[in-house]
Amino acid sequence: MRLFLPLLTLLCGLLCVRCTDNPARFATANPQGKPTAVVFDGTSYRLLRHGKPYFIEGAGGVSHLDRLQTCGGNSIRIWDDADADQLLDEAHRLGLTVMLGLWVEREMEGFSYDNQAAVARQYKRIRKTVLKYRNHPALLLWCVGNEWAQGANNVKVYDEVNRLATLVHDLDPNHPVSTAISPDSKRAVWLVAERCPAVDILSVNAYALTDQLGEFFQKGGWNGPYIISEYGAQAYWETPTAPWGAPDEPNSEQKRAFVHQFYPKHIGSRPANCLGAYLFYWGTKQEESHTWFSVFDEQGRETPLVEQMQELWGGGKPTNRSPVLQTILIDGKPALRQVFRASDKPHQVQVLAQDPDGDSLTYAWEIKLRAARTADYVGTPRPPVAGLFQNSATSTTEFRLPRQPGAYRLFVYVYDNHNHVATANVSFMVQSHPEFQDNVRE
Image (cartoon, rainbow, N blue to C red; front, side, top):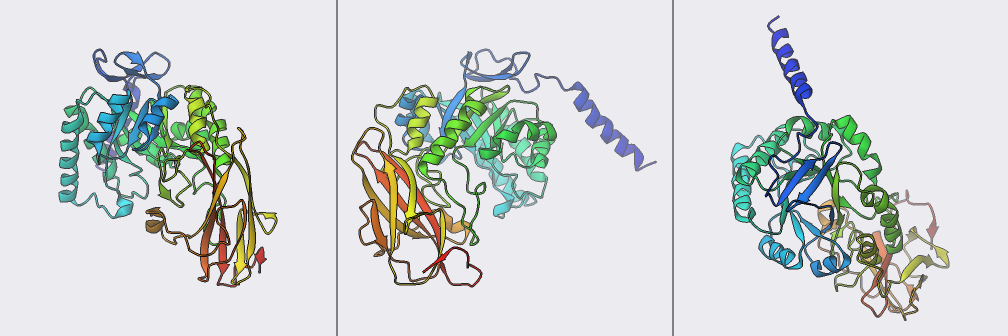
């Protein structure tokens, strides 16, 4: 009986929370006069900016903000306060808003939420950041952490996220608080719903999982507002993978087509409770490859996704369009991945591409070693292997294999004379182990 009574009390408490839960519990209290507010209209949640409806049509990134604005975008997402002064000021100058991230340390990277001293330092750091930026006119909302629930076995992190969200509310009652997770775990959604009542908006880095958001929210018990905090090309954990572990990267035209199909259904239709979305990544980022998520190249040239977003965000049709890259041929055959035996024999490679405006095209080819560890393929782009191409500036050329066995990517870049680039790559293995026998070429 002594054991039964506490369990009964706990159960009654949980039932009481559910019974008294009202549909507008995520809405901002007294939204009048607040720069940003979440309101419930009797059917679903909406975001208000200075009292007017505001739907987020934004991107994550720290560069090319002027181009985002001319494309019709209205907001940027940043993950921490590095360079926040400059970014907030620039966003304000351009009439953009900022979803400002408050970085929460992650258990999967070695942080322990049993370490009270470390937790206290994090709390102090976040408090300082909120006090510094809470009155900035470009601030739209706060995001407490990014994908901190991945690999988190200690539920204390959920309680700490809630404590941090409560802190933000106490210091800044004028802006809503979100947190960003991957939605593929109903456990994570459920734990946020149960243990993080101070979170106003659930942000999800969804990508191809967006089709299943309704199911994830239902099973996880989330019935509040949400933001698609990352979407874009199919991510590298969502595409087929070669036997040596390298995922197949879509080319730039396939990425454009994927977003063209994805956006109207999941964002442009403005689903109930959806407050908007952020494309990933408005800039250049090395993650699996230097082209996978990058909407611009290192020199600022625009991939086809820029013009696609300009049309989707209402910025109008571009006056000049990017090259359309179709496929790469190796030795006359279409290639997405390949295994080679080590050899000095040259191979012919060709890219098939055209320009919708009839612009003349130029080309560049590179081969880069694929990193074997996550710490290496996220961060700094790997240098190309030198001396492998007969001519790296033509649409058709010959290349020799790297002498070192291992996993590589062969990249091609197609440029017009209007600051556009189209990209594609082939994943290949220079054979060193007998298990890689499929599709072998000398």
